[in-house]
Amino acid sequence: MSSSQTWDVGEFAKAAAVTVDALSAYVDESQRGQVPVVRRTAPPDVPSALGDLVHGVTNNVMSVYEMGAAAATVEFEVLRWMLDKALVANACATATGLYDDLRGVGEFCREHGIWLHVDGAHGASALLSPRHRHLLDGIDLADSVVWDAHKMLRTSGVAAAVLTRDEAALDAAFHQEASYLFYGEQRFDQVRRTVEGTKAALGLKIFLNVAWRGEDGLGDYVARQYETAHRFWELAREYPGVHCPYEPDSNIVCFRVGDGDQRVLRDRLIDEGSFHLSSVEIGGVRHLRLTAMSPATDEETLRALLRRVTRLATEP
Ligand SMILES: Cc1ncc(COP(=O)(O)O)c(C=O)c1O
Image (cartoon, rainbow, N blue to C red; front, side):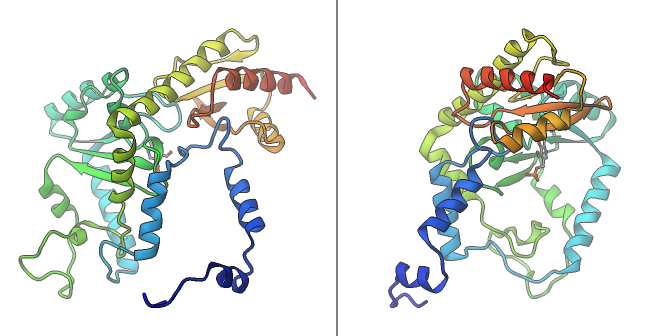
């Protein structure tokens, strides 16, 4: 469509057989599990969706070139390099939501000349909450950190960053020959440092979200989710038949209800549409796993979940 053409939504909807009802049904279905205890991604804030809309219309990719099978090879080599040389610390761990002792691990790595990579995909956002940033104490010792905005900073997926202490490390990690792309001194371009050939521009949606809520606003969101999970843990410990193996650090809390198959409980909750939990093995034993993500999850939600799941555990 050229810029002189007009955009007729009605005509498009007719041609594509898209109806408002169909779209509404799609949105409703997509939102299943968002409320009240949600899946692992945060519900995106509207400004980040605006970023997606802008990119959708402009197709503003950061660099475009063909790499094909080479991308897989590079990715494999980077992983091999990391596994060979690096120690990965969790901040926090996906399964349990617990933070490693980053300072202890970091000092060990410094002493032994080991590269420290911190997986802060989920939990680095706690840096924005004054009440929780102590969990990241020692992250300053990391050589590299991964941080996902699409987990706790309320952007749509994907919006992730790999941060390195030394900028040159990124250049060293990615070696490619492509004379049509690389020719001596070039302006700022991430093209030297990507695995993908075509890369979505991710910064805008993070930028708009920070502009909309501010660092404090995003920190408040993180704090609220972490405190919600902690509150669940407090309530759960009072329930007979509910076992929590540890006090949660983050918005992830694991627990078991009764001695039965926890996957059956999970499936029944999801099938009836009441709550969306995940599940995970800890020490070989399967647990239910709650990730507090939705701003709508409140004390009553947590109590309702405990009532429901303990009732289900006693039903045949
Ligand atoms: C700590 C951590 N690292 C990495 C990942 C993978 O993130 P993604 O699926 O967005 O690539 C997850 C996902 O849950 C995570 O919790």
